[in-house]
Image (cartoon, rainbow, N blue to C red; front, side, top):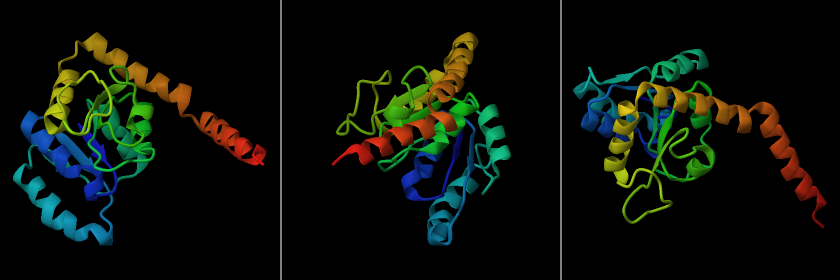
Length: 193
């Protein structure tokens, strides 16, 4: 499993480490620790990494080449966001390498991930149901179930999910597609009285 991003509570690093511990699946973390989040990192994140050195590996800030390598070798990207992520470029970056995403159904997640096709979406809690996803458990239990479901997939099914990820990105998130989409929005704005 892989999680990369700015090290801050909203990105779900604590939840990802909990999933790793509960499932006993190796977790690779990478991210930028900004000055405003140093206390959070050193008080909350780093001690949990030290407790589980064989399970949780932290690489700090990495370049795109190394991040792509993590994604390519990772079974999945875990994205347990704790806020309404407006887009989540890292999900697209993971899927571009063929890496399925397991994420909470917050923000743009249901618009970016195709449940059961390019990853698995999990409702954040029993009180926060945002869709009828394949995984029925919610919260951390749901993330754990989703992780185990991907690890248990037959090889051919998993390889198809990886291909689906790449195809989904090529069909929806290339530079050309994104620019065309922005141009349509700008045109609509310009056409309004």
